[in-house]
Each structure stands twice: as structure tokens, then as C-alpha cells.
Amino acid sequence: MRKSGSADFVYIISDALSSLKESKGTTALTSLTLGFSLAIFSLFVFVISNLNGVMEGWGEKTQIVVYVKDNVSSAEAMKDSIMKVAGVRGAEFVSKEKALSELKGALKGYEGILEGVDANPLPASFEIKVLEENNSPEGIAKVVGELKARDWAEDVQYSREWVEKLASFIKFMKIAAIGVGVFLGAATLFIMSNTIRLAVYARRSEIEIMKLVGASDMYVRAPFVIEGAVQGLFGGILAFAILAAGRAAIIGQVPSYLAFALEMPFPVPVFLLALIMAGVVMGVAGSLISMNRFLDV
Amino acid sequence: MIQMFHVSKSYEGGVPALADITLKIGKGEFLFITGPSGAGKSTLLKIMFGSEPPTQGQLILDGRNYIKIPQPELPALRRRIGFVFQDFKLLPNKSVFDNVALSLKVMGIPPSDVKRRVARMLTYVKLQHRANFKPLQLSGGEQQRVAIARAMVKDPAIILADEPTGNLDPELSVQIIELFKEVNSRGTTVVIATHDKALIEKYARRTIALEGGRLVNA
Image 1 (cartoon, helix red, strand yellow):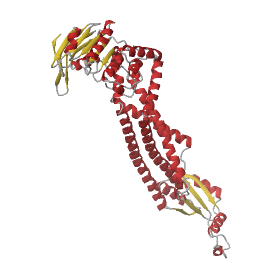
Image 2 (cartoon, helix red, strand yellow; image 1 turned 90 degrees about the vertical axis):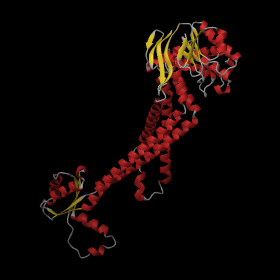
Image 3 (cartoon, helix red, strand yellow; image 1 turned 60 degrees about the vertical axis):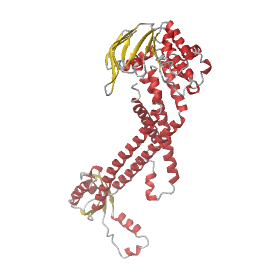
Image 4 (tube, each protein chain N blue to C red; image 1 turned 120 degrees about the horizontal axis):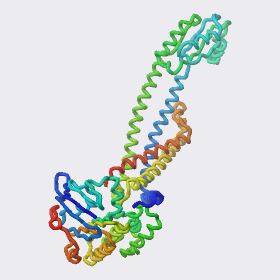
């Protein structure tokens, strides 16, 4: 006859605590495996997020330059006309004067080249950015075609090769990231489920005995779930510590062009919480799945 | 209390362990099941306990008819039955006290009651001085008494014991059967599987014999 639910709760918690105490070695090993597996997977997510950010930054750069004829139309009117072109996100006017001063800046030390040039020979221009959905070789070609048709446009330039290379590189990186991510995710799950399975297997006779004296499945499962959660919690914290320590150790030694890989893609508390949650979910799920086959006694 | 009708059990490959067993055990009865090794004694007890489903036949336990005991009902049934296993099935990393207490804890008995009842039961089986020992620090006879204490502490309606005197000397065997006799005198049905003929003769209780999975007297 069942007597008390609160007594069950007390027993479940005390069983879980005493079992954690008794199997310190197994708990530490499982937490360690969880921690390292999560750290490897997170490192991958970390690098991919940063790489994605960098690639998006490249895409943000000016993609099209329209050089305009002198004294044909006002800058405002031309800008309005550009903004009406489907796919254009923004246009920045570079006046003849600004173009010249930028050139002078670029020729620092060789200003003599410009001696004797009285009138400003440089055309004014618009630096144009396109919307993300048009940020493909085809989308940009369409915008360029429309801009060329404007009668005030002298010339339209864009780096076709650069746009196409960037697009195919981003596409490749996305496919590679999914492939490596799936592979790493599967390997992480495999390692963790096997570690937990071994830990549960070592205690199969305990599960059997509890069932034989009349314990319900819930009663048998609960301490394992709590232990799985605790191991996951430690694993998550450990993964964070490994990543933070690794980052701190190499942060000053990475060449500047690779420094982007060490940027924090997420706020630190979010990252820590995500790692702990991933650890707890995996620890609990691993325990539940691993012990199920021993419950049929 | 326990009724079996034409119960048969065969394992994978068709090896028959029990064949056509019809048996009735009354409330408060004390019964020996005897027979040579491999006769089917353990299988018969396991079917009564619900840990082995019969291949054929029906089982009535406490007025309920089971063809196969449904999984969700097993815990409740097992809390009413105390099983003494041939290999004791004690938790090696738990103390004697905790092993006996397990029976009561899974029933949700409050901790203060558990403490009182386990202490009383350990005194009853003369193991009060071993309460904090681990099973592997005990002799075979002492481990056997821990297993019996765990089965008895919950005041079950039925006690099933599989070779409870299997590895014990005659003097200890008698002590253990005396424990069962005492609990039986308080109304608990006791079923003991044993091949110890001397013990059966000494106690002169109802005895059924199995041979090759068949009942040879009832």
C-alpha cells in the first residue's frame, strides 16, 4: 500500500545525493566527457558564428559605384532616382571634392602628381549597397542594368568576380558548416550516450533489485534523472571553463586577420546558460534512454 | 491466496520449464516446493511473483485473475509479496539497514516509521549489531538473514523463498525456517522452494514435488 508522496520525494533526493557521493569517480568521468564534448561542439559553433559575422560584413561593403555626369542633375534628385531601383538598400553620394580629397589622401607623399591639374577631373559618384535578398550575382546584375539606364549615369562599376566568388564562398561555408556540425553533433551525442550508458550499465543490478522489491519505474528513474542533471550541470560549466581558459590563453597571440574567430558571438551569461542547459538536457535524456532497457524486470 | 490453472512455461527454443501445473495455496498456508535442480521450482516462484509470465494457463493472486500481470500493476503486487532470492540480491554498496529499509522506502513509508520497523526486524533476525555493515562484510548466513528481513519487514501477505537455506549448515537452516514459521503463525502465506529433504521431513508441512517441470504430487 502506498503511504506518502512527500516521503517518496525525500527518499528520491537522498538516494540521488548518496549515489552521487558513492560514485564520485563515475560522476566526475561523465561530467568530464560531457564537458569536453560540449566544449568541442561549442568551439565549432563559436567559430562558425564569428565566420558568418565576418562574411556578412564583407557583404555589407559597397557593391556598386555609379559615376555621374557633371552638372546634369542635383545629388538629391539622383539619389531619389537610385533609391527607386528595386533591390537598392542605400546610396551614399561622393562629391567631386570629396573624391579629390580622398585621392589626395591616397597619394600621400606623391601629391606632385596632381600639380598642374587646375580643374577637378574626378567625377562625383554614388556608392550603392543592395538589399540582402539581392546580394547575389544575378541580383546585383539586375540593379546594375537599371542604373546604367539612367541618363545622368556616366559609368557603373562593380566587381563581378568578387561578388561571384564571395557568393560561392559563403555558399560553400554554409554547406561545410552544416556537414561538420552534423558530424560533430553526432559524435558528441555518441560519446556522451555511451559514457552515460556505461555508468547506468554498472548499476543495472541496483535497478533490478529496486524493481524486484516493488519500486515503481518513476521511483527508480528519479535518482538517475537527478544524477544525469547534476552531471550535465557540471559538464556545462566545465565546457564553459575550457573555452574561456583556451580563449584567454591564445587571445594575444593570434594574428589580427584571425582575431575575429575569438570574438564572443553571444553574451557571456547566455553562452554559459546555453551550455549548462545543453549539458542538463543531454545528461537527463542520456540517463533516461540508457536505463529504460533495464526497467523491464 | 494463490491459484494456478494448467500453467506451462517454456523458454526460447521450446525448452519446457513447467508443464500443466494446477495448484491451490490457501491463505496463511505454509508450503514446501521440492524437487531436484532444474525441476522448475524457481520458475514456479517467479511466475507467482510476476517476474516470469507463463506461456500458458492462468494465475489467480488474491482473487485477481492474471494471464500476464500488466507491467504498471507489478510494483503494487510486489509490495504485497516478500521474495527471498537464492542469490540474496542485496545492494553491495548499501548498509544492512539500507538494504532492509529499501522495501519500506519504495512503499512511501515515512522515515521515522522506516527506522523503527527496520530496527525491530534486524533485532528479530538477530542482526541488530550488523546494521551498518555492508553485505560483503557478512557471512553467507547473515546475508541470507538480511534478505529474509527485507522480505518480512513490509509485513507481506505472501512470502516466497527460493532455496533460503541453500548454502547454510543444518543448524542455521533450522533457525531460518523457524523465522518463516513464526511469520506464518501471524497469518502470512509462506511458500519455500527447497531440495533439502531433511528439512521437509523435520517440519512435516504440505509439500509439492516437481520433476522435469511437472507436478508429481500435490
